[in-house]
Image 1 (cartoon, chains in turn cyan, red):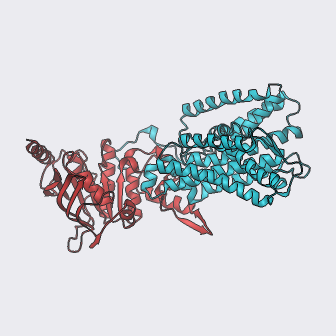
Image 2: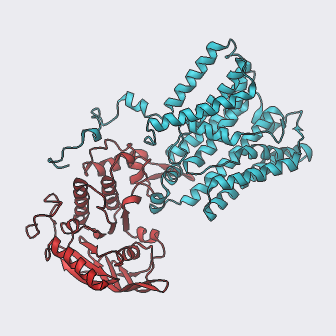
Image 3: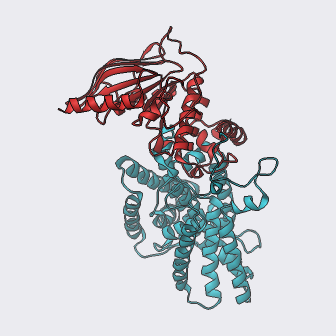
Length: 342
Length: 275
């Protein structure tokens, strides 16, 4: 800057400390997970005070298993949303994949590992179709995946037509995916959830792929001009989203030891809600994996907590709906359109 | 700058050239007898034009003169229907902008310069990230990139940015373009293409962008740019190419004309062409 320019005071940031770093308080405020994290703390405190048995093993089991499957779906959905697209078919895929798996190995006696592999490949193929249709024809993914939602719903009807597939003796794969961890109140999905979240946190923050995902959803025009293969990035994230929805569905099946076509109902919207509560933008370009994990825990805690204080079980979605709208209004009002993605 | 009229909007702050243009060798980029048609509609007629290293060439002319089409041909977005392109003395043909970019032709568009939500260093290195290979993984060299971006941007003197972690939406349109020009220099571009870099910018911002252009020029880049505002063209342009209905009608050397003369020239010729 030349000396004659007196910069607008509002545009000049406060000075840094000697090493060119932000102060601790400022760094904390820049953590996108801070707001949803505080929200979770408040909700947990509320239910701890309102109920006598919030920290009981039964409650912990219920919250962590609900949270972990939503969170695994939400991690894939978050990657896709950051790259600027939606997937409304994850809820149906959450039932479809374990139904395929169960039919192959429970009903037809196929090797359970092979059956699982086939089911997961089919789950991924759902994402391949979603991605190809969206990027090749240039139509909104909202429509593509809404179409896929109905296609899979029809398939689920066709495959088990209102029945329930039950597996009485858990197999090796089922114990791995949904078994209890020793004598703790926790089950395998929570461990998988943390592993998957760590992997995608690393992908988003430290891999070129993550950088390209953020750029693609931020603004595809400049990203493309800079040589980012935006269509390929989107297609890959469609596959990630579909694959992890299918995998989470298989975990749910392994934990419950049964699957109906109603499994995963509303999950597409719950996953988006978890992501948005966690700070992911509906318009792409910003979001974090841990934010979505926290969002999933918020949803699960409210769901189980309301039951504990005697609210009818299915009422919780009303509460979630109101909270979602309030959080988005707060985000817009506070102007957190996009914090830095360091 | 003494031979320029005094009422130029962006005054003395644009640095003078540090060296003369060496026209003994080959130009950075050359169009030879280029013609172009969109379907049956011919828009460029036999245009020959060269840009040398360290030279700023401004394309001026009214709407529909063919400026944008020529810029697109330079950037590889359009393949001319006739004529040859030469880059650093060799015949060239691009089928995509990516090819043009790969050999050192960098286009900076005001609205396409940056991804707002990303931090400065992520923008600076977007598409050209420093990565460390670990098997199939491309791990970002975050510290190197942050450091390099911060250093490059510090030289621009941006007041709003303190660290490379800051998101780009805190920057103004002019600052983003200055960063984009700095980025092009950093990655060794030979030719810089700018499409109305000063449109809708304040006086101060305009001067900052023109300073960045001058810096790139002194760094030895060839620069081709389109601008509508003659008072922004004159302080930095070495040659002004006047286009009219797809033809080069005049090439004016630096200092030959004043802003008014240039504006008159364009208006008069346009009137005559329309009559």
